[in-house]
Image (cartoon, rainbow, N blue to C red; front, side, top):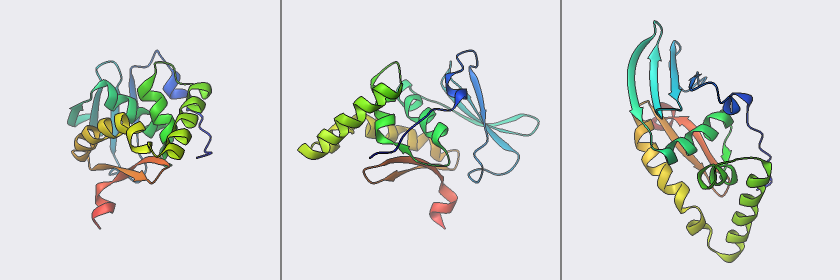
Amino acid sequence: MQTTYSAPTWAEEEKTNILHISLQGLNVPGLMFALNRKTRTLSLLSEGPLLLMEQQLSVNEMHMLIPMLESFPHYCPYEVLLAHISGQTVNSASIERCRCVLQEAQSRGTWRQELRPIRRALSSLRTKLHFFGLEVSNIRERGCSLTSLATRDS
């Protein structure tokens, strides 16, 4: 669990409420996601732009989705997800604290209990992402990543 994490600059731009995201390899060319951080709405747009579908996200679902988008195409470590869901400010110190908490939980055998808030938020987020053809894949004791439902089914 020694992965380092540095958030891309677009996540820290407080001025931008809508992030336009193209997940290379996960969606059809010509389609783009728009994440409105103010209304917590994830939309799928086609060229034009034309709104194809939309899902309203809870605060905790947003806290899980943003770091996974930042980490894409790689996985997002559990300590980063825990830092996002458990605090307002996410920085290297808060991520390191969460890393220590998880390492201690692993040694005490309370890993599953420590990850309960993450698992709860991911459960509802998964359902909403399925509408977009996306899946959240777990990497045992490491983290989560965004994948395509189409590649999972094949």
